[in-house]
Length: 144
Image (cartoon, rainbow, N blue to C red; front, side, top):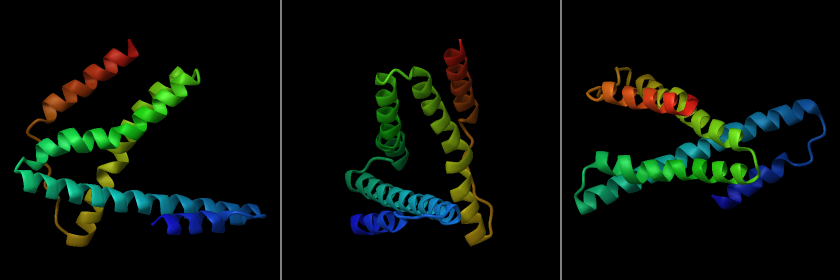
């Protein structure tokens, strides 16, 4: 995987024209999305296997380990820019990342599953009221 990443990065270097640079940027973006999707699948597969091995529900594992694992990069980048003196950027990065996850990270896999299976995706909404209340309270606390 590392060799593939380095090869693709090296192939983008030395681009002279703006058109080639734009194509290379789009190519790098799509490639990075592919790698994120691949490693996310690997992480979820390993977490499911781990949950089955030790006998805990997958939901508990998802709320704890996977949530912490996906939030750690956001935390590290926010701490870094805050240390540089850009506190507003750190806060907006945290909020923007969560908004992106909700508006892009959730719907795209569901749309792809619908496109492949051609049947609606069932989503449990039993605790949607509580989740919505928590999000609204967090937004109020951040704004005030």
